Amino acid sequence: MAVSMPLWEIPVMVFSWSSFFIYLLVCIVVFLRRKHISPGQKCFLNVAMLNSLAEVALFLSIEVIVRARKYSLLPFYQQLPPSHLAVPSICLTLSLRSCTFLGFITLAINRFTAILCPMRYRQIWSTKTAIVVCLLNWTIAFTLTIAGIILGDPTGSYYFSSEGTIEINYIYRGIKTLSYTGIVLCAFAVMVCTCLYASLGYVIFRARLKKRIMGIGKGELRYLLCAILTFVPLILELTRSVIDGNTFVNGGHIATTAKKTWISCHDLMLGVQFFTFIFITRLYRLILDVLVTHRSVSVVSCSAIDSQAGQLHTRHGKEIHRI
Image 1 (cartoon, rainbow, N blue to C red):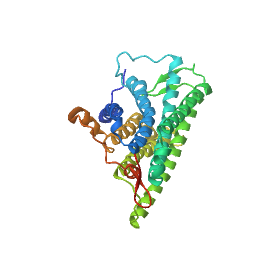
Image 2: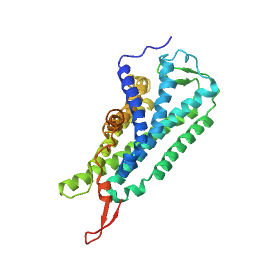
Image 3: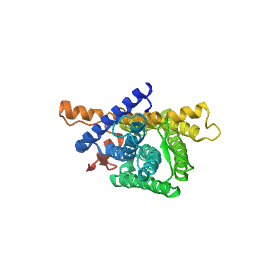
Image 4: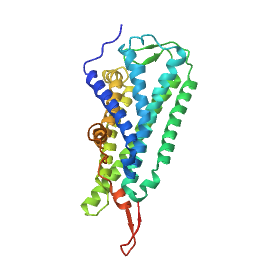
């Protein structure tokens, strides 16, 4: 008999799916209106959207592989998957978690470069660089997936638990290794992102305190706020993962709650990422532009990088180049 979905999970699921569909619509509109987006904005959007491919894949894998089976949301999805698909699918899901954690680090480095090296930002974070970094993260994810499958025997007996996870009747080294690898990468991502964002906050605070002009546009600050807000749920996910994987509290009430809420925690983390990316960066304006006004307008005000790169002057004030 299928487990009924708790009432508190329904609004989380609705929020995550709504943010997901709006995000996909925004990505399509951004692609159609890419010629009307400034170069500085493209550098951020390329990194953010390419990183989000792993987040989209993780969201769909959790919803289809775990939630749909746990609550029998799909009538044709009642049986356990065959043995040659069950363990690889779980290994892929765990590896995608690791890929999303690497994406947090990539986004933090992108914002760090934009604030501290504004004049070289567009050269450092070109479209080619964004693609290479994205492919590197995916390569790591697929390598972990293959390693997880090789480390354990996928032919053992397994079953779906009440928490919606596939439980192995013996110690499956591959899945356990991937679980601990994900926790380590999550902790590493939290540590790196905290250091980078704290450093940026300190630099901006000192500049404001000394009334020194840094040349940071509102667009760059808005993107920085977006990156920080998407980083906050990662801290909550790290706390839940540590409690879930801690053998000292395993079996207690706290660990049981952590196991039961892992789907909603992931939904909340990914939903917040999609939501902040849409509304904090004001990308929703592009949807209104296409559906309502049919005008070509900018997403947000151009950053200081774009406004300063428009004209280069000599020491005598003569214009020598215009982009």
